[in-house]
Image 1: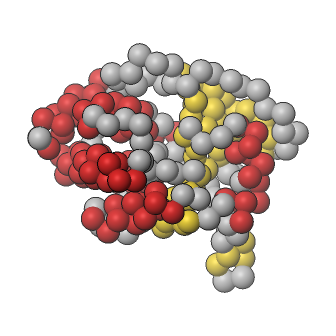
Image 2: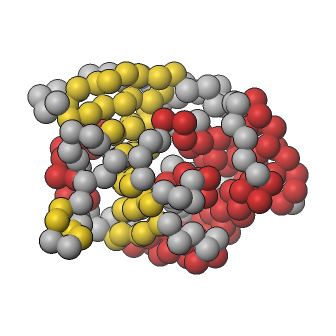
Length: 211
């Protein structure tokens, strides 16, 4: 089953202008197979069919990959690890923090980290509002903060404000486009329509920064 899924993934990636090694593709397929296996007990996603996960999880997440610049990325409300895990698999040189309040989901993410040998991710079971990372006495700000199907844009901006500086870019994944931002501390840089192979539904990306 793994090779047909990899070929399906490879075809979708090519249609989107994305190219990854066979080894990376195999690891991405292994990841969604782990989701399918754990889904029965942990209810990680409403999507049960692993073939559907190729487009609705992997390709949907990787459509945003070209916009991820910087070395430290926070994936808020990571859930089953989307988009954080696909990003971490395809960008082993970057560091990812995946945060979620659901203990079952963070246990799954920890197992994915072990099974796929993803040394570049850190899993945090906590409310993002209570997450205050410090290194050598200095507060940590992230280069990129991502969120997919997590909360309203304003809620994401406010709950992660203490983890942002002027250089931080927030990448908010949406279905139907909603560019409204009420926060006076943020501005929309641009919005993008994402072309995800195999998906007919609207997909958009908002890129936001602190003023």
